[in-house]
Length: 229
Image (cartoon, rainbow, N blue to C red; front, side):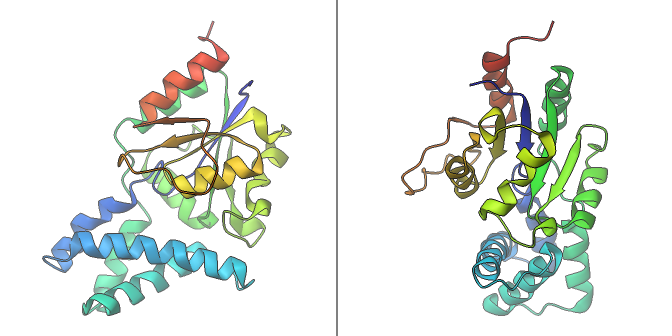
C-alpha cells in the first residue's frame, strides 16, 4: 500500500453535521437533537433514492427537502425565517476541532489532498471558506459533476481521474461507515473516522483502518508514507 493522495468526505467528516443541533434547539426547544438526527438520516435517504431513480437534485435542495420533511414529521412549525436560519447554518457548519491542524500536517507531508463530497460546489465553497480550509486542498470535487450521489461508482471515480492515480493509491476518509464501505468496494484504501464508536455496517466489507478522530488518521498515514524529511 502506497498512499499518494487523500480524498475526504465533507459532511460528517470535515464538518460536523450535528453541530446544527444547537441552533435547532434554540428554534425548537426540546427537539434540537432529534431534529438534527432525523434531518441527516432523511438527507442521506433522499440522495440514495434520487440516485437509484436517476432524479438528481443538488445537495442543497435535497438538504432543504429533508429539513421540511423532518419538521413535518416531528410536528414542528418551520417558518420561513427558521428554515432560512437552519439552512444558513448548514452552509457554514463547524469543523471538528482537530481537523484544520491535522490537514495542515498532511499537506506538509507532501500529500495531495481533495474533498470528494455529495455537496454541490456552492455549498462546499461556503463551508470550506468558513472553516479556513481554502488553502489546504488541491481539489474540491462535487458529485454534481456526474449527477449521482455516493455510493455510485461514478462519484468515487472523480478522485482517481483528477489525481491520475489508481484508487488503491488514494486514501479515502469518511466518518460515515456506509461511505467508507462504498469506497472500499470501489477499490480505495479507506479510513473510517468512527467518532461515535458505532458498529461496523453489515455489508461484508471492512475499511482498511479505523480511528476515533482525525489525529488517529494522521498516525495511520505516517506509518504508510514515513515521516516528512
